Figure 1 (cartoon, rainbow, N blue to C red):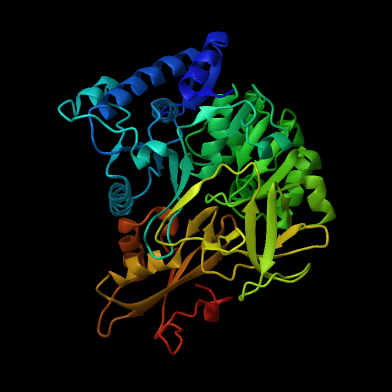
Figure 2 (figure 1 turned 120 degrees about the vertical axis):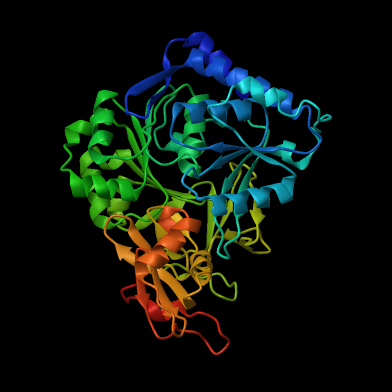
Length: 489
């Protein structure tokens, strides 16, 4: 039987009042502990204020939260979900123009988007719109649990939507995939990724609803990460291959430091063989898991370290997911044949919706693709092929070249531009740009990087700018990025 988020947090607080729910850090990196009692009380007060404010509005409301990795963010997330209002976790590093574009898109879709001020008195929210008439629970926004931005290839936002309101069901928490990977109730978990990303966000939610203690550093430092694992006897670690590679490159970690760890789960990007093998040595093959999925939640795969050792390079078999490899005409391909990866989630799918200017590619029999390519072996294990689409994966962050190109083309000295992936040791890829100057114009690579930084989040800013006489285009005027493959951006 399911219960509300509010009731679940209250129930845990009743039995684990002074136990830590979250271990966070202040601006000086001094450790701070939020107990279950404090989480219940603080989120409860803010939830009541949000409900009171929403009741005075006629237009639907999406509540945006600055998703810093802090205790205050956790309180805000729990409060919004407890109030049964749609939650939008925002990247706190996104610049004003990018954020405005996203919020404008949300407002046009649902009527209203409001940003929580974490430093404001919660009661102020209840009085802010006291003169407004009642808010309708029948609005489209009232049927949403949370929204996760996923970017957009044309520079416009895309949103993955989790239906709501959310409740706690012990048969669905944690997600079955995490349960298969060794998850235990009441464990100590370390989350290194940002909370505006799907995997860290949903891991936090599952942890809170399952009574876990979450260790939540505000940013990633390799030595600090290992220290936290040892100090808190961490049992579950959520991280990305970029984190894993950095720890290996800057440290020589001792397997004894990870003695308490039962599961290391990495997501968000492909993992190179050296990093994978070294981490298998660190934590043991039965404790390292890889998940291949997407924010759009069309399905996913899971592979354990010992399976990977038998089939190096695989991202696993479908987990309650059917996988179909298809050619450009939509025909199914057999084992060993490379094509576009389509997935169809089974009974554990949460029914997420997808909203935005760039829709998923779907088939008549219910499969969908995010554009990745790969092949299946005879036993159904998926291997990803080099990306044939244009998305650049920067340490797990998806960068769509059209968005960066649009920003470059706004500069008055730029005539034309094309953006491609540039190899990078830690992140795997960064953004490289080829730029054609306007005749008679003068602009430096540093000036163009600064121009991009003013309108884009940091990971989307080119790290290399190469000036060229022309960029490759087809006779129809379409960019041919593949002609630049292997060149140094």
